[in-house]
Length: 93
Image 1 (tube, rainbow, N blue to C red):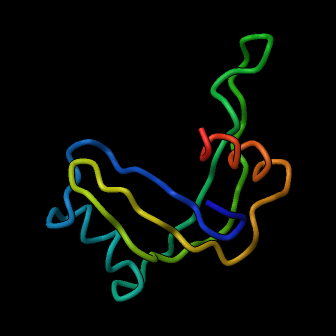
Image 2 (image 1 turned 180 degrees about the horizontal axis):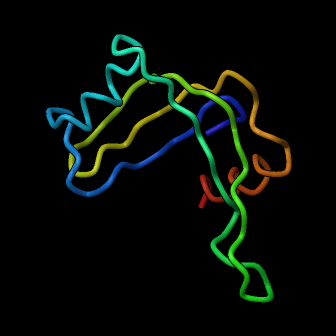
Image 3 (image 1 turned 90 degrees about the vertical axis):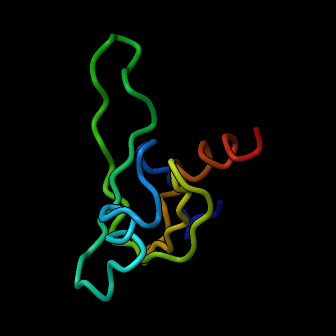
């Protein structure tokens, strides 16, 4: 979305009314901290599994849909430029 907003989709069985869905929506009230880790792709050019990059902690902003839920997280720190550049391309297309 941008360097401070991250779109994420839950597992297919997760609805807003489910215990897991409620834990996302009410994580601050429940004193749960959301930590986001991402990777650019599953494997590198040699077939090795890529490592994850820590984006930091995030807070629930809004959601849409059910089974799966589409959740928008507000990042407390901006996404690194090299990740934002590539993820911005995905958002367009």
